[in-house]
Image (cartoon, rainbow, N blue to C red; front, side):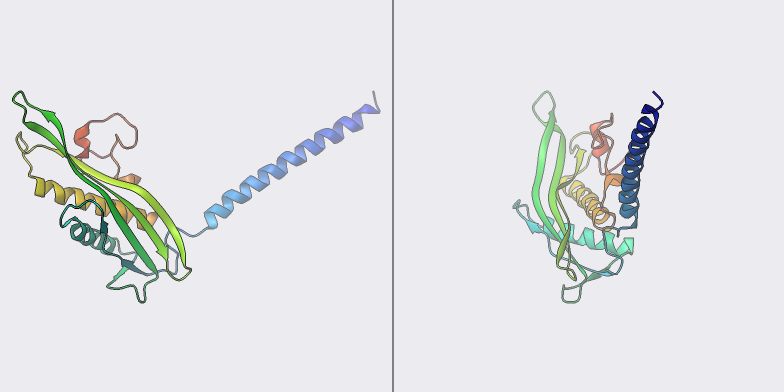
Length: 205
């Protein structure tokens, strides 16, 4: 029995050493992650925003979205917006994949009393100095439920502007920080909520 003790101790020591090595390796990965650069490289200061490509056929939404993105990027202040890409550090590309006006509810005589405007886009950010893709995000979306018959009445042009502004904010957050969860509603986050939360971002926590 006395001879067996050193063997048992050795096995326990080896096991503990292996666990410690695993923990150290995991800690090293976590620390390395903290030491990494944010989404926008630290030395990047200038951004060129390409005019969004509109695959939907809806008129004027490309210009509206471009204006909103430029405005919110400028307000954020992290990046300067270039008029062209000749001297830019980064390039933002947006492909508008969906723009829909959906009828959600009808009254007793068949009129649509609740509608939704919904836009989706694929977004890509490129590092022009390193010639690499920083991120590609498919299906960034924004939408708003409204009625043009029941109070509070809103028109399609009004709601379109709200949706474009919300989309501009989301694309800006994604570009600068890598996330736009702060722009999402409770329903989008999988929490209980009401469709009216999509009214341009009201009732967000």
